[in-house]
Amino acid sequence: MSAGISPIGTAVSDDIQESFEDPEFRAEYERLAPYDALARLVIKRRDELGLTQTELAAQIGTTVATVSRVESGQHAVSARTRQMLVNSLGIDHVERQG
Image 1 (cartoon, rainbow, N blue to C red):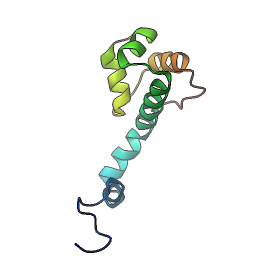
Image 2 (cartoon, rainbow, N blue to C red):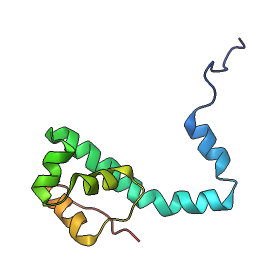
Image 3 (cartoon, rainbow, N blue to C red):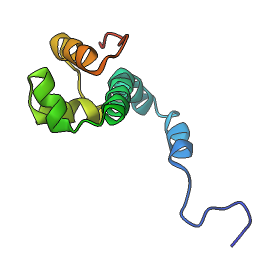
């Protein structure tokens, strides 16, 4: 095996960088960026608080499926759900999503 070459292939970040050359990929990646950012924030904060998706859903008056969709980082989140998450998780600020 050559030095510096991973036995399991390239890093995901390397693949993403190469994929940015495709305008369609770049546009979709940028479209999903705010959803991904919210997902990461919710997951991190929920973990810090020791909450399950079920417990968070109950706190904000929604379904586990809704929490799961938010945490997937692939879907828009309604203003109401976003505000409920902010209030329940004690998050200071969440950018508005497209």
